[in-house]
Structure formats: structure tokens, C-alpha cells
Amino acid sequence: MQNRIEEARLVLSKTNSSDKEVEERLKEIQQAASGMMNSEKYESNAVWKEILRPSPSVREMLIVGCRIQCFQQITGIDATVYYSPTIFKEAGIQGNTKLLAATVAVGFTKTLFILVAIFLIDKVGRKPLLYVSTIGMTTCLFGLSVTLATLGDVKIGIILGILAVCGNVAFFSVGIGPICWVVSSEIFPLRLRAQASALGAVGSRVSSGMIAMSFLSVSRAITVAGTFFLFAVISALSVCFVHTCVPETKGKTLEEIEMMFESERDRQGAEVEMEDAERLVQRE
Image 1 (cartoon, rainbow, N blue to C red):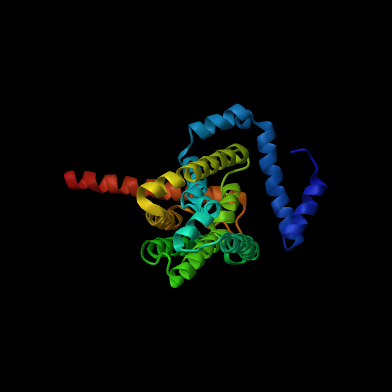
Image 2: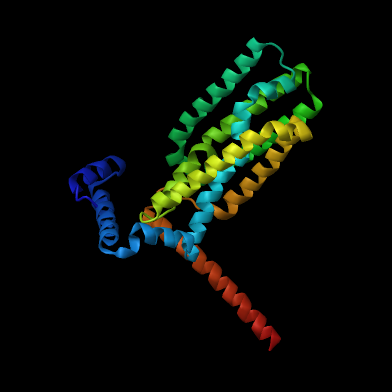
């Protein structure tokens, strides 16, 4: 948009494998930028109007982008990290030194598996990693709930509790933790990306705050084990969400992703129209 074409070409040369692909991508971006500059449709007020009164395809993008940000937090990852000493005490660990060591292990696991995600995200794809992440988190959260409820203060319970917490953090960090930000930046067209991604980020921060502030109160009401069982149920719902709503964006251009949402909406609309027509024929 600022006519810095050679700089754009240089960046594209680092992210594409051939000169031909670089020129194709550059041409697509120039066309998109030209449309944004030459049309009043994409002024700031018009963008918010399009977000607040979205077309079916944009509505689908907003649902995916905002929900994945919320699911990232309401599965309880911040509560797990913030209150890991409380969780480990519940599992039976005594002494500040042991609690500190277990908490450091959680932080180390989180950092390590974020690095793993960096290497895997473009090789494996977004959706497979999301499946691994959400299914793994559900298993660990359920396991932690059962462990805290039945094996508290028992040595095997302490070991299983630490493994469940570290496993939950590992699965989060290799999948939905970083990928939700990647997907949120990829599914929106250029004209909407800044505002729509900001809405998703607001949803993420609000969800995080709600979970963090309510964890102790909820755990007193239904026990720590019950709280993590609730997180396990929410995590199971996130698996269903990934399966039904989140598209695979690996290797696709922004234009292809936008067309994918439009095609999916058109297909669903055609199915609804066909069902209505069949009902009408049956009545007649």
C-alpha cells in the first residue's frame, strides 16, 4: 500500500520457494492493496460496519476466530499455570522447595513444547496439531481430576498429578496455544484483519481474566478435582469445535482461505435450499 514493492519482494523471497511463486504472490497482494486504496468500502468505519453486520462468510470467520481464542483460555490453561502450587498441594506435595521444583517443571515444559510447535506447525498443519492438542488436554485434565479426587496424598497420586499438569501444559503449547493466534491472523481478509483479530484478542483476555479470577472460588465450591473435571468437559467441546468449524489453512493464500469460507457457506446454503424444496414436494 506504500509502494515499497522491492522490500515486499525481498520478504516474499524468504517465505516462498521459487521466483515464479514470489511474483504470483506479489501480484495478488498488489491487486488486494490496490482495491483497498481505491475503494471507500474499506475505510475504517466501513470495516466496523462490515464486522458488526457481517455477510455469511465473514460471520463464519468471526465465529472461528473469536471462538478459538476463547477456547484457548476457558480450558483452564492460565488457572493451571497460575495456581499450580495450589494444585500440587492438593495432590499431596509438601514443602516449598518441592512445590517450587514442580512449578518450574511446568514452566520448562511450556517453553519446550512451544519450540516444538514452531518446527511442526508448517510441516504437520494447523488442524492435526489442534486435534492432538485438544484431545491430549482433555485426557490430561480428566486424569488430573480423577487423580486429585481419588489419589490425593498418595505417592503415585503425586506423580500422576505432576505428569497430568505437565502433560496438559505440553499439549496446550504444541497446539491450541500458539495455533489460535496463527489461525486468527490467516482466516480474515486483509481489509478486516486488524479489527477482527483485535476482537478475538479481547475475547481471549476477557476469558483468561474470568477463569483466573474465578478459579479459587469455584474450586472451593466444587473442589479442585471438580473444577478440573469441568475444564475437561470444556476441552472435549473444543475437540468438537475443531472438527466442525476450524479449516486447515496450511499452504493456502489469504485469497484461497476467503474463498474456502465462501464456498462452505454456499454449500451449506444449497443444502438448506434442497431440504426446503424436498419438504415442499412432500407437502404437495
